[in-house]
Length: 291
Image (cartoon, rainbow, N blue to C red; front, side, top):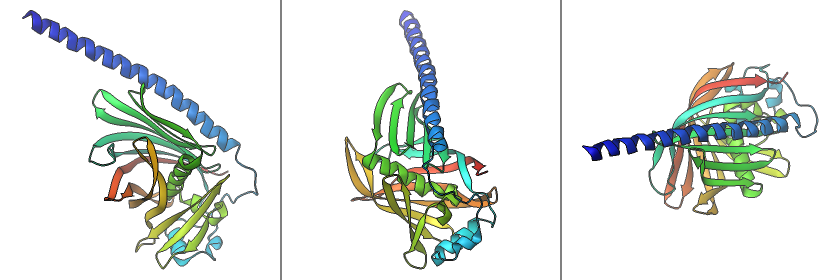
């Protein structure tokens, strides 16, 4: 019976150590995330100078847009809709941790978005095991991107930051997710639209030295069905390779007078075929509007 006693004590000790590390890691992660949030808000306050932008949507600005884009804005916005300045979005779903296989794990996350200057901070908890979460932040703040992932918030798995293709890729994510904050896609907010057929259009946005274009496709109801970039930096081992990147939207519902998607899927177009890595559903969505 002695070995059973010692085994039980060892298990209890290991459990206590794991719980202590998890609590310590969560505390450190919360503090680091709060610092990033302050950076995001500071960049918002110090938005790049330029001409004043409209604070309410005026349907008259649609007159010169491609037909599918006009249908989209008429479907999702009401004339006089206040312009979104920021949003807080809670998202739950599953994330594929493998670039080549199927290693789907559940996640919970909260995302803070500011529209001007464009930026976001995605703070997620991915459940590897019940007592072994991976903490992840993905962000675009003041023109720079960052991806940091750590087991328990302590043991780093990935940590990259800076400009170049990393910043471009994170800015691309901000733009693709604008279906959640649709007034950010208006021409009065700096987006240029070009027709690509009866049910699709290219949208171009600029932030500092970065200019990027995404293809948006629209469905029967005029809503955005999907988006696509022909090249976005994807991590393959320690390398970054450029791959087509696309996602789809569904489950549109009305929030604060706007019709927005609550479900989405994102994936890479690899040589072997399409590889989804993110499936998520919005559980909470709160807006702040321009004064």
